[in-house]
Image 1: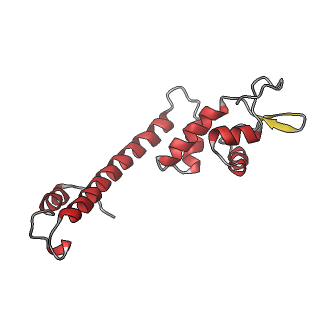
Image 2: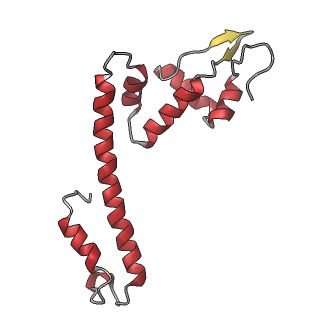
Image 3: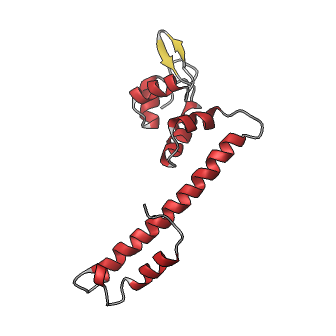
Length: 145
């Protein structure tokens, strides 16, 4: 759906919002925060380069990964040769995501065990359904909070 109206493939704010599934208000906010470059204006209207779509995808996945907008700004504007700050942020988030996956795995296993548990209370399970989960929980060195 790139513009075919002589704008050189540039996107209106509405087209960008639709293609990226990002609300127009969010696009304007990202401009204010410096997460995306302010677009050129043609005839008084914002016209974004198509590569802004990739930037928005990066921003979306950074948000899913739990980065703050300040951290995202650091990542998307990091033009240093080694990108040390970006790598540091990424290492921290990978570790946090791995820990979250472990906690969610335990929570999932607990829910699955509660489905098959035949005891009147999962806290007092003596049918054995909870035993593997309890063992994993005791062995895991993770913070459940």
